[in-house]
Image 1 (cartoon, one colour):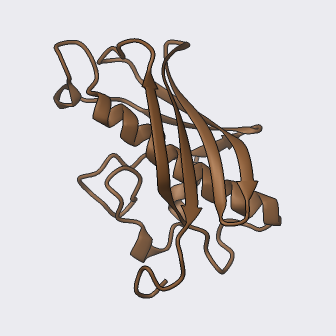
Image 2 (cartoon, one colour):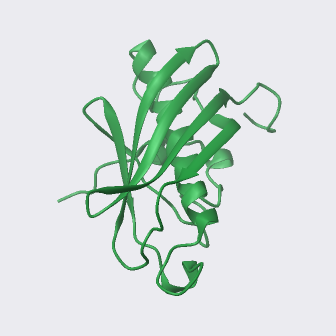
Length: 158
């Protein structure tokens, strides 16, 4: 059985080095996001070194999961809106213009985290995504990302 391709699998190589979602960053989180109906989903299991206080996940990690899952969701939404496959040209890649994270309750270290997202708005080169993290079905973190399409010329070769 083959592994389902994630949004991040379609990032051009020169844009696939992000610490949170870059498939080419061997030291990063390498999150993998996919559509699940009208929502998106990714899974991540924090390691013992992702600790804040004993038994709980570091908030910066949680913010980065919200951030990278949301920018991947923004790219997928842009392709979906245009009715294009994610491997079509020109590629869509998004960066974070704003990140708002609300920690609702401590996130326990150990269980797999489920990161979900939903598109709130697509307007030109901007996509607003709401995302949340669940542990055993309980929401521990909610966030919103304003993602903007990478401007031409910002990154060489893109």
